[in-house]
Image 1 (cartoon, each protein chain N blue to C red):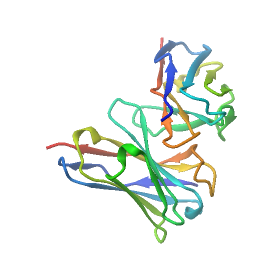
Image 2 (image 1 turned 30 degrees about the vertical axis):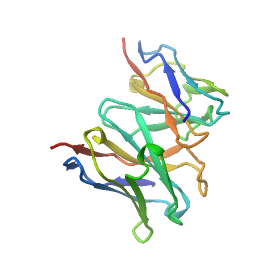
Image 3 (image 1 turned 90 degrees about the horizontal axis):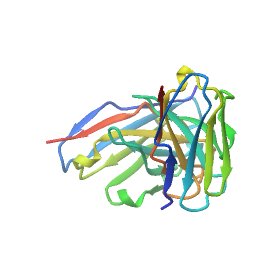
Length: 123
Length: 107
């Protein structure tokens, strides 16, 4: 069965970076694009960007351009999301979410989600 | 960016009630719309995609309709496990955006 297992909670100081991992299993890793979505406490959902697990190509929401980097390791079927220059407003649960349709960068429906990783930014 | 709005922001309902949630996009998105259900402390769950297509395993009491800018999610007979927050999301163009959510709670 499809599973996305994310790394554990993190506490970071303002200005630091955080790297969250998402390990996929139960399907062919390279054919489904992966997205990252975050949710601040008590707030709604915010799309951050997408990565092609096959070629590594990415597209980021403008809001995060210059601060976010998404990468992948095909040998371990893992995608990563690194967010730098953290501020208190970045405190949120970060989710990886799989695109529903294989081979499609425009597939924006998310059929499987990781369990979420809480990142707390506080001095 | 395409802005998504939802109404109502919250609704109190009883088991067996029919509940309708509306979602509006700031510009036409054809049928590139999804609905998700989220329970506290859990990841969202895909219910409906392409405005009206059922995700596998979703009960038939959930249905979606609409195209262009106006969409609805209907729960035909509310069950205890349906109390949650529901989000619409446009998948027409980057950046993908979500509505602010509609919380369905017990009356």
